[in-house]
Image (cartoon, rainbow, N blue to C red):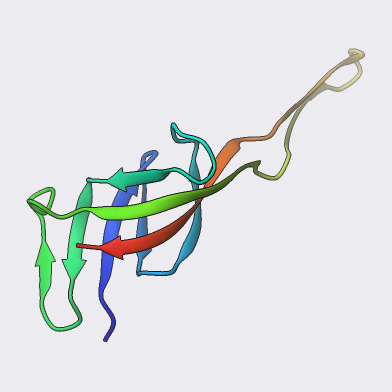
Length: 104
């Protein structure tokens, strides 16, 4: 088994291992900078699994920001029949692409 961690960021949980690339809610920092995710919920070194209550003490995941991007377009459309009323609103969520460097 490989070492992995379960981290929480942006209100969502992700299972990551070293070398993974993932898209998360927007984070502070420019492309190429390093970010540390300290809210580690579970940590495995390949043999033992440590589960936090709610966080694992002293555990962190170091990742590098690859780029800033946007998610797919989500369209909200309202209509009331026979009234001539319709509203269309589009939204693209800003995302940050991370590459996990180390788990520890």
